Image (tube, rainbow, N blue to C red):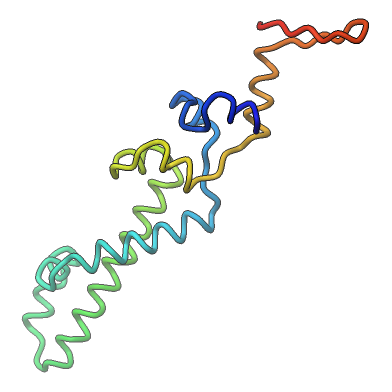
Length: 142
């Protein structure tokens, strides 16, 4: 980890390296997806929810206010569930891209995601040859 710190932290690494080594755990994906879906769903008014869930005809055709309320609740649950699935898929496919598109800076993304230091170290070992000869260490870049 000190090598990365010497470089200036995770934010100093190129985007390709970050794409290869930053990841979210399944739990992180679920938490982010649920939180984001809840926020997006809450931002929608009732009319938008009903239309998006394709339940507006059912709502306006309801015979009682209780039936209409249930249809609206069901529509909100459907929209929320669909949003969770959509966001989860995006985070599984390209989490760095998802966060960049949402306006986060790479430094902020590196704070919320995990970094695979082992894979990064293995990648670096392919770029460098280390020779220990007579107590001296020589490092050659491949």
